[in-house]
Amino acid sequence: MLSSFEPDHVERNMAALVAAVAPGDDEASLRTRFHRALAQVQRWKPPFGTDGEPLVDFDLEHSEVRAALRDILGRADPAAVRITGEERERRARDIAAGAERLAAYDPGAARSLQLLAATILVLRGEGMAGGSATGLIGTIWLFPDDRWDSVRFAENLLHESVHLALFLDEMINTLYVVDHAALEADDALVTSAIRRVRRPYDRSLHAACVAVELIDYHEHAGNAEAAARMREGVAASTVELADKARVLSPHGREVLAELIERSGVAA
Amino acid sequence: MTPSTVQDHDHADVLDDAPPPVTNASQRSFGEDAPAPEVSANIARYVRQHEDCQLYALDDEPGI
Image (cartoon, rainbow over all chains, first blue to last red; front, side, top):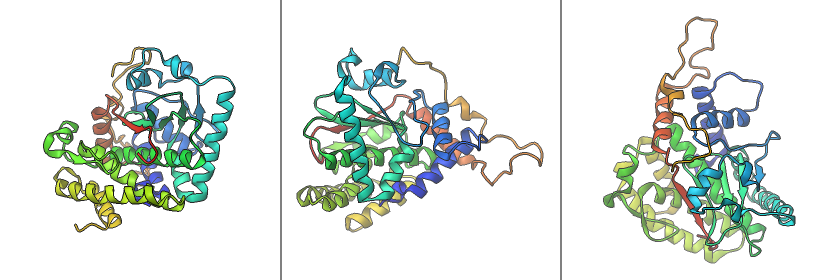
């Protein structure tokens, strides 16, 4: 597992945010204090459950992230993506089964998901399976359909929780020495390990980190073809990431060094 | 991104004065759980850079 995604590292980053933003309040759990601290620094304040587990949320009407999603999803009517009725119960069971499967695969990954995700927003959608966003650490959303089995739910929960861990790592430790505009400049574009198109450096660093985690997951799930595809994508992308490492902070270079080690490419 | 239905304020302000000053020995021990100054600066930088909330979308295709 990449260091940024290890639960101990995640907890250190969570504690650092709490210490910087909201020291005190020592009665609450670190997870609760962390999400309270996030609510102080982020524009949107997703709800989070009080039982230490991510809140599975279907109700856009009452979600603090509705306005963000309206822009992100490009939908004028957020109600069009709401899941209603019996399907809510079914999807809640699906999410639980996916989280269980993730825990059976790797308890550390499940722990990081549990720490980082305040809200799992489950919606009806086409053309997109899920997502997360830089200014919404703590929130992931999924657009499941009936083709998804527990292997796929677990895969997508793993995928999104790696993004959340990297967002937090960037927030606390800084991954880049240039601003976002420079990461999007043509000379900083890198072929994504997943989409296989040139994307901004930060997007491709994320993709490589997600793909590295998915290699092991797919192998564990018996999906050798998907694992091989990820491995090939990570190797090619990591070479490009290393070529443009000038944009990385010292901590960003540590993340890259792990990618190089895991992908087996020459530094 | 400009939300119309959520309260909007400058969240980076929360960190502008961080780390909090320690004014006497009875207060929280600096270095025990107080933030390193660079951490507060990193957080403020991240918040400012990501106010526009960039989406990381997961495509609707297995393994993508």
